[in-house]
Image (cartoon, rainbow, N blue to C red):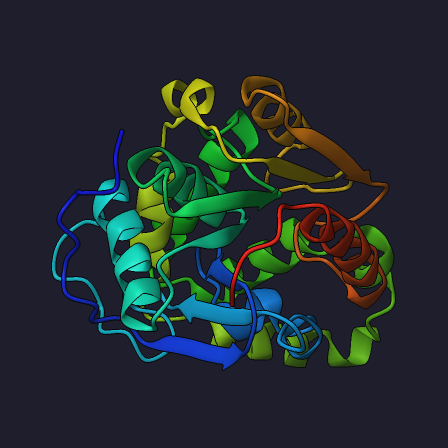
Length: 269
């Protein structure tokens, strides 16, 4: 494939920060740039230009008027990077963002210098497929508090959950609910339809796959299959880490990602 695909007009809310080789950030379903990458934005921006588009219905991006399509979302992220003056970049994808990153790499291979795929999947595993359906069912029934409880149980580690004082657990649920973006259900609808298995053999960019082994939303085996399907991909496991990385696990993630990025061929800023 080539990079002469027509790009749509960039209409997403985009965070742009830093200077240096570009990193295009692809966040997860029900997340956002700050929510997924907030712990490492300042560090990475010291020597990289960060371009972080928000999916429709996240950040300041308008809610989608029709179901999200993976090709369109991938192209809109690339368009956001190009609009920010970045013709080539590494793509860092988290959860759903990993599938978006893979599709970017196969639709725009000449633009993609590398991929970092964390807690990713090529197709929903049974746990993720069931969770996506449950999220949509709870929302349809108006059980938003229960949806927030499901998010906490699915995305946090048992140790992190055990550290929450039972007296403030309901407050934690309320904060989780408040943080859910308006487009969350659209994002999970896309999750339920993602299938980039055929793309994996076409990925030519250097790839780092990071598997949190304590992930209870996306099974670690999904990350291992991503790494196995991409020629030459490196696989790193974060022992016991949950779907949402806590500060300690995110620090370990940052060390691995920085080592990987430092080994890439030099490029102009």
